[in-house]
Image (spheres, one colour):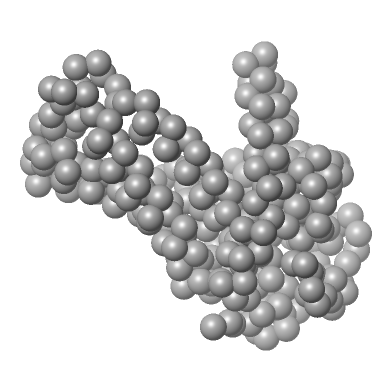
Length: 283
């Protein structure tokens, strides 16, 4: 199943133009809303099995004497076993990378009016998993070191590398090339990009606080005292949170990527759609 959606809500879209900060966020909300079915399907296919495996690993790794009271887990050591940590790190990283790659494809295609197909998006992201892993490692190490040494360099890197995933997925570059491409696109637009990301983070934070309050109230109302039930609610909470977080972040990133390319390269909608929609682009 595929669908075609333009950036103005019509097939084929409209001529691209530079967007202001508020317009970027508005376009991201509109893009999310119009493609929600495909985006949620991708999130559920990728995240739901991983969330279930993670919670099983956590339950299996609980030390003897662990118990749940009123929705809160208590363990003798205050932590869960190493198996759960390994599963969360490995499966969590791989699933998030595939998820972000697939969402980037869907959203950029939808924004410029190309047909979108969630199956093709997942397949393409899986094929690019190797470069995505290297990108995540390079990004994670550099940003972590920058934050540890001093906060400002970390913030700087987060902003200048904010569109590295769309660059990697659409421009067929490697991890280093994607980071360099993102740096090139954000040059001269750091403060505007930072403002968009800051506003998006604030909106996302408010939504997550509301979701967390609801899930917390549900746990308290159910008075969960069984580790299996606690694990099931934890998996459900992960899925609900991810349904909100990842598509919205990907939508903002997709609009930013297109807007930065339009500003720097002066691309028309037709030229950009033709470039990104060329046959065999995932080959």
